[in-house]
Length: 304
Image (cartoon, rainbow, N blue to C red):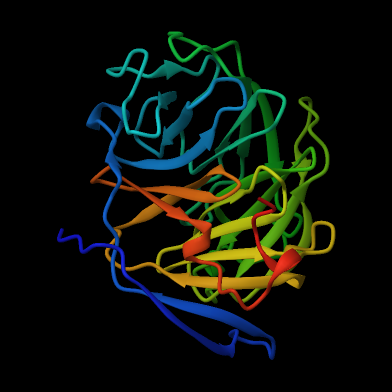
């Protein structure tokens, strides 16, 4: 892969979002250069990353189906720490299709076994664990939270609308964004209960015509900006009322020359990081490179 230096054009185009009359801001980019490379021992199918709330400059990664049930600690420079050959075993967990990773401010990680490419899986789950020491060999036993979609029995599996690769934690709850092959939209759900003795039904919130397959999401540390990845773009949603994320302002930033990216995380209030599959290249983007300048003050993702 050839990597050109990042060149950001100061041109902003306004066009209607698919299926609606609202306006969005689009900024063009011509290429990216990776800032680091994560060792192949971390796995070559990284599908979710999260920033530690307990350990400075520590990030966690998971790989998707066909890989061991481990979490891998790494630094922003790409260096894997601890036991790089094996990662940290998640006790009591099975990796059927781990597609996302989320973290809360209390030191918990949420491993999202929610991949469902063919819509054939009827048992999906979230594994909740306290963050272990990056040099541990195994975690405490994971809490298993079983989930289902509210329309599981009414929607044909042929529509392929219940795959989820993007989960984030916002104000004490988990939120899910689906990857819909049927119409390239995404649907937002919220997990309102976490009973361990029965299946928890997600709450439908809204649908948005995002125009691509959603592969990752994260909320900024100040809870003011939601980043959503598709295969061809990074979206920022901000100035939203409560958890009605799609009703606020939005910026779409096309991604070119980055490979297949399925994970995204805020490194701080002002920067986003993502990793591509297969190459394990790590990219960082300052929010100021994405902000249009069109919306000043509260219209900016970052409060800093």
